[in-house]
Length: 202
Image (cartoon, rainbow, N blue to C red; front, side, top):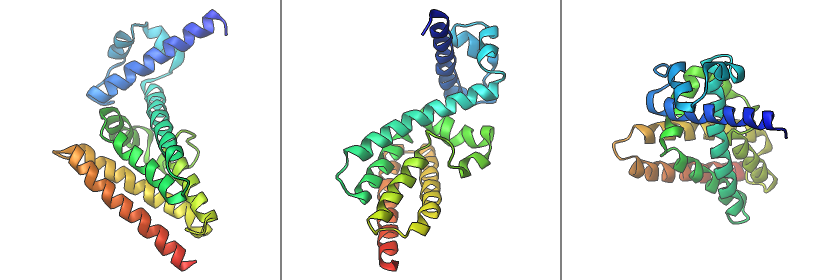
């Protein structure tokens, strides 16, 4: 990689880091491009070279936060016992832990749907979305006979929707840590019940 490309990548990373910090602290609407370039320590021209508008920068910020959560959920799942239900559960708890963090609360749960649109939350084409890990886990459960294959896609949407709602409740709670524990227990029961019901039905 040549020096110009390296500098460009570094500038882009600075802008994303500044965006994460400012969108977390202030929200999308209240953050100006002037503040972004000041926080990143770059010129306005550099901002528009990499991102044509603030919405595109936010999208890059959203993807970066998704990547971090995806990595953590994947690692937790891989470290779990070799059982589909345990793997899914580990990934779910890693996701809920991430929902205690301000950047997840602001970027993924609050601002993402309004800035990027709800349609995005219905698709499977975000390569770093934790939803894909959940679907992979449910497919593994289907191969083990715990879930009917026809229920994998619907259950993925239902469980991921529950996780996002749980994260929203956690972020708004007076005691987020305690709420995370309550939500974790409830989602765990929901998961195990869904797997038992599907296993019985098959």
